[in-house]
Image 1 (cartoon, rainbow, N blue to C red):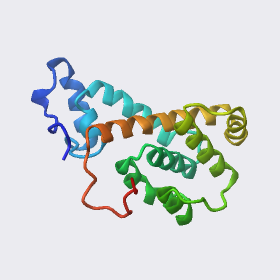
Image 2: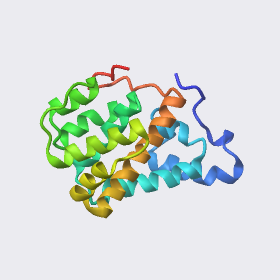
Image 3: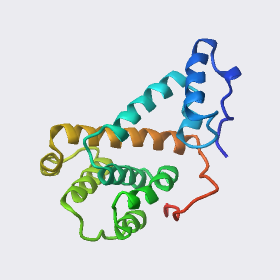
Length: 185
């Protein structure tokens, strides 16, 4: 159970009710689970965040399998059950192998990876574990994705880290319908 009750229009400050209404309308109702279920308590910030997310997910130069892998690396490194659950199956649908997804989940040795996959995993793990990225790791990612792609990769990982902060901090429940095993944490 989440640590805060579901937001309502009545408990949102009057000057933010239009932003709340916009978010509710765009999502087909008040979100009951997931990051938006807590982020909507600051509806203007949530609106802006999800506008940014829409760009990263739908207009980025990064291929879908790279996007999904970046989300999964972030979820694994942040021990975020919710983001993991939301993206493990879609990562496989985007072309990630089951072996890669399972190895990330279980923190086991990874199978052979395509160069762009290796760059994402190495970059994400190094950054989340050390809060820095070595020159070599940076260069490998830059060679795979170019400047724009690398900037988008970093922003995508940062966005999903923000989502993980929200769901982990507010203790957001996983949906009842899950297709993937939970992360061993």
